[in-house]
Amino acid sequence: MNKSMTLTGLFLMLLNFGVYSQELKQSNMEEKYYFKTTVQGDLEQVKEKTEEVFKSKGFGLISELPMHETLMEKLEGVELRPYYIMGFCNPGYAYKTLQLEENIGLFLPCKVIVRDNGNGTVDVVAINPAKAMESIGNPDLEDVAGEVTDAFRTAIDQMPDKL
Image 1 (tube, rainbow, N blue to C red):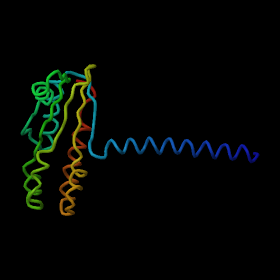
Image 2: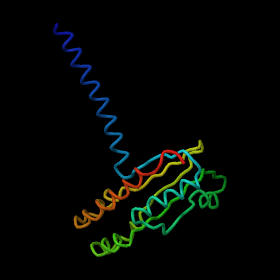
Image 3: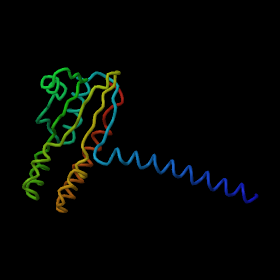
């Protein structure tokens, strides 16, 4: 093997690693503050399934904001596809976090977005609680935030691809 072929091979390998590294960085950015899945199906069915899956993880739906309706009502000429912000809470976790951080209510309930993509698919996007809790700077929250994050990640992973 001659030197130029070796250098060319090394250059191509480094170039591929750079592309792979950028793709990895972008995929990690997605999980930085949220978890996401896309479901093929009807928006209302996906909302019901989202509530069912999160309930199976111990979380109850305590709020639902039709963001698209609110913005279209308040802003003249604005049109948005259906976009719901659903607030989920687990009383046990909420109580634990309140014992560790009295202002944690600013982060409660944990948010999940259900939005219609307009093409027969619906995105379900859940906050990554551990990343949100990092901004508080209270290391005592790490364990409970990790538990909630695991439950949220599992819930998103358990959403079906199609309804």
